[in-house]
Image (cartoon, rainbow, N blue to C red):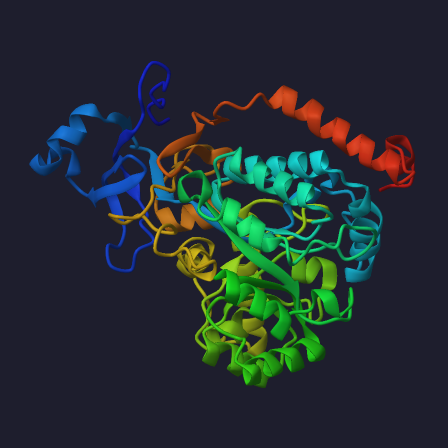
Length: 472
């Protein structure tokens, strides 16, 4: 087994030297190292190489560094989750066999969402962010579509900031139920107060739907919401992008000049070739949800990886809704890899010469660097390169599931799990260390989450025992 990680108590861990382990940089320039060093100081990656520990130009920093022996481990960039509805996490796996989008809309957005208080928003978002960190996700876009009041929004933001994750808060009004009507006007306050908060870890965005089919025209992306985003200089995340109506919408945005590189399309299943070409020409980004699309049955039910690549878009990956799906990036990578290769085999005329297949390195890239690009954050995270922020994970390569280490990328994509993530740093600050979240009382968190869950169920007239009897 790898050498135990050094204790953090009694030291000022602003400088780290990770030395001796395999390094998957995620950088097309640097490549990977079977053994090497990463030097981190004050949240920034200073150097990556085979013998950084001996470099005289870093002698002063090395003298103060916490030295971490990473032999038997993989040093990798933290994962980037490009789209998760974090506030729902008290209701994880409550509708595990959801059959279609309508069932999710009715149960979660129609019934549960109106029962959420600001405190519930804080607890749910915080739980989702902590679980993301525990699984090696260092950046997460929270598509927070339950902004019933300014207080709900502030609570969701606090849930991100409090955990130390690199968070993007994409705010949207609720689909259904009573609310204060403050959105999107309140976004000006949110941007002024929170943009760049937490030492730059927090980014604010606008969230919208592709069309008015689900919740009416007030939530549908178009000239009005595009103008809001432009005036505030923020990005836009557009959910429920699928099918013929979304294809028409994408073409309309293109004609109006409001489809561009700061617009992220979520799902993008079942779009026409014309819509895909418009997205590619505009430089729009795409967030796939590899388990959501087939399990919930979104339009075609097939993650649109080939369609995205065909127009030059390398997508990001996302979790989407934990009420029905897994919450880690390992699952997303493996699912996408399997689905795309299945489609490649099916497309071969005689099944012996399959079409182009994506690789393990491709899906890792989607989960890291191109996830960061999708969110407009590739200048600061997504790869291990000098000058970038130190969003880094250490993965045990000698566990029963991962030993022996033959291929670091293959191990990350096909072998490892959240249990193998030993350490997680965001901005150079340890958020998970020696297998445990830093500074988190998990027992207290469990009580808080459970009480919040039970209160929500009581408000909607469905107690815990009733839900269990109903098989929910």
